[in-house]
Image (cartoon, rainbow, N blue to C red; front, side, top):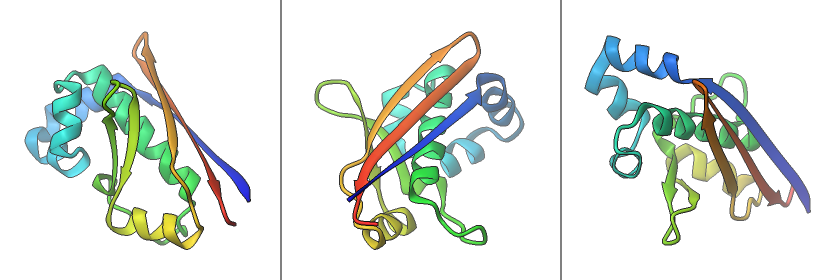
Length: 124
């Protein structure tokens, strides 16, 4: 067994600018409906979820030339209101390939920044 981690830091202003420039097209390309509902489309909460997606992708380590859609990693709230990771598509295939168990994620946002850390046990 191996422990894998991923961490990401994202600026709220970057997400606000992307929404201002691209609107619904950006939101629907990056976030699932459930993520948007959980976040209430709040820029700070969306940015934390964006950082969470990036942290999970760093943990999964796709090849440099391998595209993984951001919607394949969803940062949702579990029954207790804690953030949880749901994988689909290419992200799920990467997780299966390394024997990845459940991925734990922690999110935080303050003063215009959001940070996320993802941790999982893997077979390789």
